[in-house]
Image (cartoon, rainbow, N blue to C red; front, side):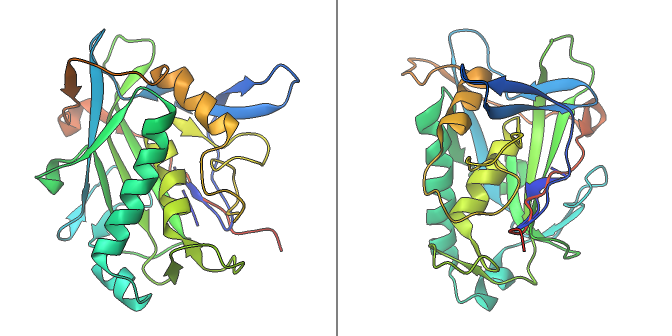
Length: 254
């Protein structure tokens, strides 16, 4: 898959410069995404919980500033060609978002207006690689960590997709792929080593986030906690945003 150009390569991710998070033993557990030297994340006001909305692309859409998700269409054809249904895909997407909710103080909600969702999910209009994420952020913000304004997640409709692990690394599991791409969409890059869902290559070893994935999410959004007040992130005008390079997930090593 390919993920920012963030993505999974069953294979390859294009890399951006990132700050490294390391464990006490010196092993790298996570990387924070950096775009043109800027760290980015979804932001909320102090003491308020953050809700990031997501939606499935309902019809063809264009994003001129994106790289691998420039043109996006619905997942319908992609799913049908793999013998999967939209309800099944929604369930896997929901489970992938839940992984990150359980790790840090960020919440996700499917938008009633998919076209205005913070994170848009669909298929590539021009198939390439496997899966990618494009991240837009507010270039004019005075914040040290710039606010993400919108993220795109796009899958290649010419590839076959599956639900569950079966050892065939040439067909990607939806939940694993979406969990990886969501990590990019909220501000994480590929770690320098393997052993995490955010790892550079597609690998059917993990059904849940690993320690580095979780630690990276906590660095960006804090420990998971309940909130009396919540705020929904609002999309920003296109003039105020700038796309990241794309990230991709790489295919497994030969």
